[in-house]
Image (tube, rainbow, N blue to C red):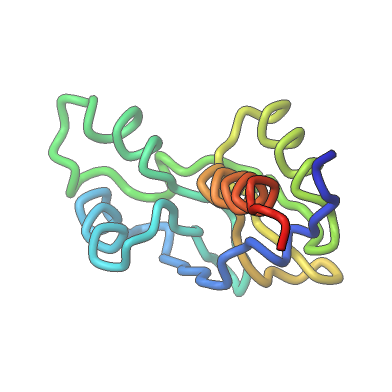
Length: 137
């Protein structure tokens, strides 16, 4: 049986926001420099969209336009899919599948506190598998 682990145990607390005008070349540089797979688009004190590595490839780099001419606002996905920090990893997995996304904004009482990704779910599953295969002491 898979334990009912809350999202907060595996979420990343690194939330990086960028202005809507940030160009695709800068988005890619920021993701590479910071070792992250997504950036949140911030406007008027809140997050209005998300740009992922997949968005960069499919919506910016695949176009016959210089990436420096493509803004975050034009390639971001919105609204941002979110989940409460107390929800289970199972719920996160189901949401990602049904909404066809790889990142969820994690919230506490409606306020952003982190992100959880498909990679986070894989890490959790791996940790669980290791625990299940430990020899009894």
